[in-house]
Length: 304
Image 1 (tube, one colour):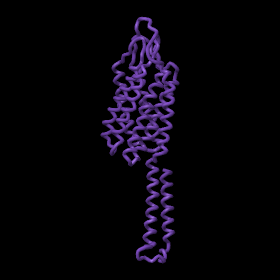
Image 2 (cartoon, helix red, strand yellow; image 1 turned 60 degrees about the vertical axis):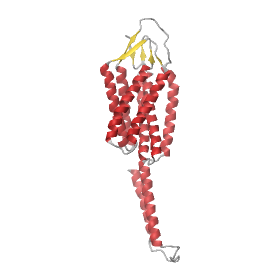
Image 3 (tube, one colour; image 1 turned 30 degrees about the vertical axis):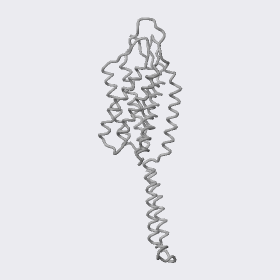
């Protein structure tokens, strides 16, 4: 039996893994908040796709392979099968997307979270073990059943809580706290699954193992994270939040009320009315006061 090393380079790999999980979760939660505020179904759908890309791609898959950089097996080279590794990426993005669409489309409901959470959690754990199945060594891997099942349980709970966060979390402090919790849960699932693993090496002296080194994924991962951050930042700036929409609606309502008052007091200009009828005293002041109240209300809402 070979010896497994989960922290070959010390704490740097788990720190970076958690940072990627936190970043992906944070971006995903911000985008789902924008999706909640969207009134157009098509816009909400593509925002949820971006959120799945952030949470599934960065928060889960990138975190997984950042952690795997610190994984090694004594007595054998370690390589990765590229097609299976790529398949694990799409499993993560698609299954997180399924959960987000179950919860995010239509009216939010607790039953949607309870349905989407287990589906997403089981799929995320399956993604983890698909990524592990991509590993190639001079031997084979198997898993301790108790920790194997525990990793699935953690994944289900984490996914359910994450989907619940997407419909209830509001505000920057709460969003960052939720992302921090999600990062801990995803990393906990990963390292529980890794602790379940043990390896059986072959007795011959094979030195050639098919596949590529894990460092081969570093450049694509860095590029992927940069693209995701830029794309999601652009989406955040392009789509107004719930608070911004509420502020704009409040100002529009105040202006519309002022226009209606001015029209009602000024009298008709065409069709029988007198164009020389003087306006009611105080009309201009009333309209100005309503507009000022609208701006003040918007500023108070922004400061909350």
